[in-house]
Image (cartoon, rainbow, N blue to C red; front, side):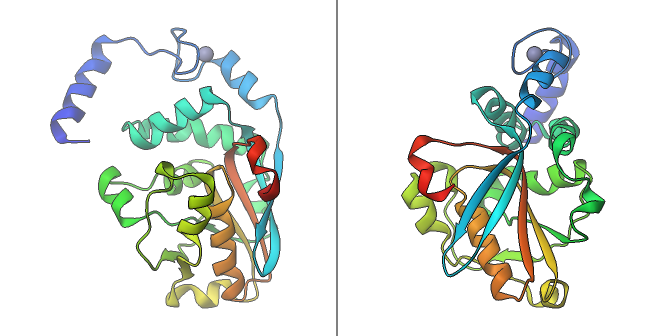
Length: 224
Ligand SMILES: [Zn+2]
């Protein structure tokens, strides 16, 4: 967001009442009843294939319908970084307490440089911190990486294959350790799968994943 649009949005906040981004009720960005409804599904488990390596179990706090994705999109791509505490609270409501993730090293999925330049911040990192996870920055992208959101399911898997690696400085933090990957939304599972592959390559002993939300479509059966 440019400085001018930041100022405009700050001014707008002074005159526009806060409404629930899901139902439009006057209250807060997510009203109590929408929050309870979102959380009512409980934790979703996803089994994510990692070609050539053991699969990974992903735990998501919320099953993402269009309403939650609207919140996440506002957070990541419409400059609503102020939603981090709210989304972090949703994420931590059902997931294992951050300090008890099997005494694991917790890593966030890397963001492409292009996405970082466009956004100016790291939404997943901010979300993970808001949810109470203490992060080790271990993963980096090693190749040109196209923004996932514009791609089909098949193209997503192609796009992220072998694009991540554990940084040289973090190898000792990963080798022989249990590792938990944090992401915001698990859609096809391609990003978590690639992160897990890079962690297995670096000698991780066990890999799991946690996410705010899971989006599942019928066409994704084979990668669940
Ligand atoms: Zn609401």
